[in-house]
Image 1 (spheres, helix red, strand yellow):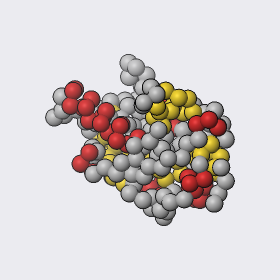
Image 2 (cartoon, rainbow, N blue to C red):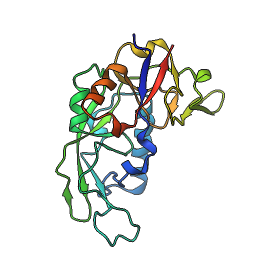
Image 3 (cartoon, one colour):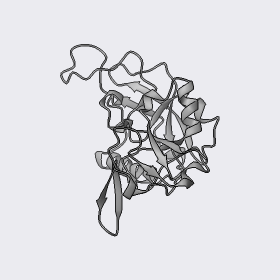
Length: 216
């Protein structure tokens, strides 16, 4: 059993957010809002979801050229992680994940499209639906976790800026190498030390901004 696991901390980073979203054609604003909200709730619970719950294309109205009134720019090549409602990861990261025990987690292919030209990036990406839930957080020993909600609906929000700000139960090191904890709100997921080591060896851990967690 490893003394450490790792938590992904990228969802709040602007550097990974390029305005990608569900294509609006054929959906009312309310339908889109309902789909997003339901997806967030189910994803944070670690529920394996069918591919029909996810778009086949994610679209952005950002532009890679000067002249955009909001100054939002796209890179010529997208990074290995792109911020969306669920994690969007490159084929390279997905290939590493497939070498490990990911349980009922799904990797659904998605095209990343530029709305300004109607073209897609010449890169392979996958929506990561983490379909494994583990009860692992030890809140009283985790300064990086802040309690929220009510006494009957308690959950935790993470503010992890350094290693060892979260403490997890020993059971975290067993079973699937990737999971979410349903008491944590925000979309972060955990990986085992062995999966983190493989991602690091492949030069793919940095885009996910992992922070180390203690296991007791």
